[in-house]
Image (tube, rainbow, N blue to C red):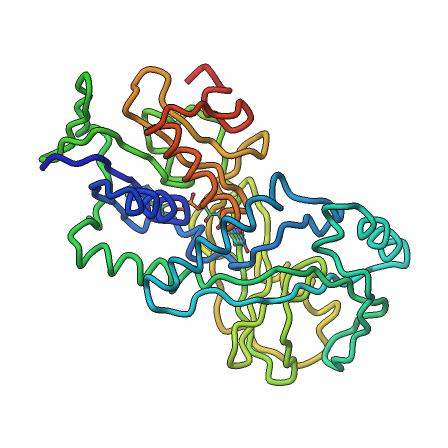
Length: 348
Ligand SMILES: Cc1cc2nc3c(=O)[nH]c(=O)nc-3n(C[C@H](O)[C@H](O)[C@H](O)COP(=O)(O)OP(=O)(O)OC[C@H]3O[C@@H](n4cnc5c(N)ncnc54)[C@H](O)[C@@H]3O)c2cc1C
């Protein structure tokens, strides 16, 4: 079989790249082995603001437009509701934080996303001694449903292989790559933290940052918005809420832990005053880079081998833009910003 592309990994990065291929009528085969869960367990929030410091995340105001229209297109294609608007309320811990919020509201780009109207809590299930600040133009993507429906479509079109990609079966030829019975022009690796097993790119400084959520049920909470305190509470419907997440760069095991559950419950009980039960828990490894920028580009020895990774804790906003940038780099020769080029770490 002769193809334009092989794509390894169908998380947010892989899916975004496959959409580029679809839009340009390229032929491809995707490999996905469910070894990583970062995209599947993500909170699903898109939010351009760093809510600790009230600053804009890197290039987020540009990325949000690309991302929302990207997910709406996928939604239309899959005939599923995947995107919902969801305001985020930032709980203030002190008057100083309220003042900092007002200062941020006056800044030109931030002002578009931060409401200057303080919001008083009226929910008796929550202890909110100060006010909330509201972030505008935020929302939620149902990533789990999106990935499942997308994979089903690919499977029906015979473009998805649910196998582990075997790196030692690659034969690199001058202008193509041979993998088992496939000859392709390019291969794009988008394996998230799975990159650690990839001998072509595993020396890049990508490290894992494990995140865990607990899922709680609380009849009395009745939240319509996402709340951000030291942790997020994200409404899922049917009295269910995602609570988290943790950040741990020491443990890269895929399993859920009781330490994370206890940490999250302790933080939650500081401001949730209604009864609740923990009904589930999930864990995933964020593919995080030392300098907190994505890792995009072409292998410095093999011109047909590319990487789309390093989305860290912001894959929803980053992946659609980064997939486009990588596609244009490969197909149109458009050079990459040094900031994101994987060759900024030249000792591959
Ligand atoms: C707890 C948690 C909460 C988060 N919340 C948010 C959020 O609210 N908003 C946000 O924007 N981001 C969030 N993130 C971050 C976001 O999930 C990541 O940025 C994003 O998932 C990275 O996507 P990816 O496709 O690059 O990697 P992954 O999601 O890890 O996907 C890689 C895929 O490659 C597959 N794979 C790997 N190796 C192989 C192989 N050899 N063969 C075949 N397949 C392979 C894996 O099975 C996996 O499906 C969160 C992350 C975590 C862990």
